[in-house]
Amino acid sequence: MKPKQCNGKVLSNIKILDNIYEMKLTGDFQGNPGQFYMLRSWDKEPFLSRPLSICNIEGNLLTFLYEVKGKGTDIFSKLREGNVLNLLGPLGTGFPLNNEGKIGVVAGGIGIAPMIYLCKSLKNDIDFYGGFREKPFYMDTIGKNVNKLYISTDSGKEGYNGFITDIFNPEEYSVVYTCGPMPMMSKVKNICEEKNVPLYISMEKRMACGVGACLGCSIKTTSGIRRVCKDGPVFRGEEIIFHD
Amino acid sequence: MTSVEMFGIKFKNPVITASGTFTRDYEDFFPLSKLGGICTKGLTLNEKEGNSGVRIHETTGGLLNSIGLQNPGVDRYISKELPHMEKYDTVIIANVGGSTMEEYVRTVEKLNNTNIHIIELNISCPNVKEGGMAFGIKSDIAFKVVSEVKKVCKKPLIVKLSPNAENILDMAYKCCEAGADGLSLVNTFSGMAIDIKNRKPVFDNTIAGLSGPCIKPIALRMVYEVSRIVNVPIIGIGGIVDYKDALEYIMAGALAVQVGSGNFMKPDICLDIINGIEEFMEKENIKSLEEIRGIARRY
Image (cartoon, rainbow over all chains, first blue to last red; front, side, top):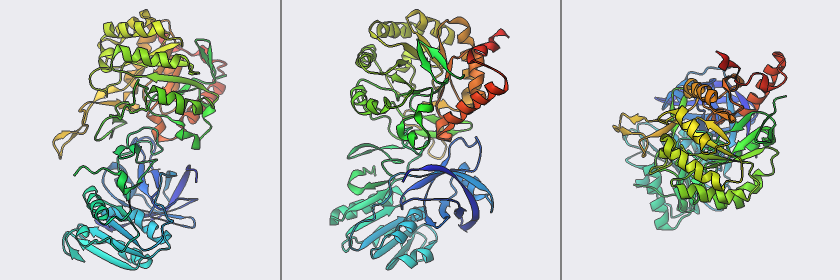
């Protein structure tokens, strides 16, 4: 599916928790789980567009789940119903959906965003592991599409008190997908390698163009230098080199 | 109407994509044959992995980059990428980087036997340690490298100048004396950013290259000044994001322009710029860009 430029009209943009927002746009959208869009709701400043991964597509409705981290996402958080954004996408290489058997999904914090669309799109049985700092969010939506839901919080306010990787065991899964903070994904990779379970990792890196041209998001992998925006963001686990 | 000519090569329009900012990944968004020209990523003799750590950092009105000339090496570019680029009905400019005199010469020799139209010598990349930059700062060193390259180069040779040169006018003059057929200016400005939480520079290399609208007034001034003292075609570069920016460079004396970071704002920004120039010319009853080239130099 070829990426294109299009407009999206804000239907809703609500604060879910602290710095986490959910924005729903109407328009003509396409995309696979793990792919992303470059977005801007401004003219020339900030200079660059912002990459957000697809959280859900349903009919003419596109959902993003995002964390306010800087200038761009702060502007997004102030958008209201009827505001229009310029979008570029869908971009990148997403998750493969053709695996047989039971699947494990491990996500941390805002890394759950692409996993929502992934869980909805997979026909397999899924166990979902979500790790959060303070409080979990969006778990009702996730719960609808998965078998079992494992939750951990650093705060101990809900679920297991500690890291999600403490309670993750990949032995019964034919494949595992992960997205979240680097230390978490690095641990997931080690656990999966130990048990010989195939893994797919969704990476994050600062981007300028989003289409593969600027080489700003290049990473060193076991298969050479790859672009997170075009060759990824989803890579096979064995390709990724974490620097712990 | 918008066409321009340099070295006997016809450009449909004066809009060229700048080195390192444009690949055929953009063909998803518009027909690349609409472009005046395409400049390749900086090619070096051997493959380069580029720099580690953060490579992109947004600033007010632009961005800092520290890519470090990541490229597959000139041989692989010629065998794997160039055949695709040749499909487009546009002028292809090969940008050549390097860190030694010999590397520049050998890379250019390899490009001599290809269908590349023009060679742009990058003596000004700020992001490669041990060299590159020195060629772009000292005009005597630039004179030597341009002279050596010119001896072997069978294509028209453009030298891309660094705004970090000790004296941009002296640099421009010496490059022309050494045999440059044209000049393109400017490359990125040396800059840096500091991560205040970690209390250290954002980039592993500390210094990075600043581009975008924030550099335009300075780059424009340099094009204006250089175009008054040299007689070769000039390509204006620096912060062009709309047709008005492009026309300013042309009125300052540039024959053509390159659009770099602007491509990151909007993938078909070059098309908007080309159309904008055409509309402006129609409205202002300008038959050829020659009528307005360097027109601001009267003042």
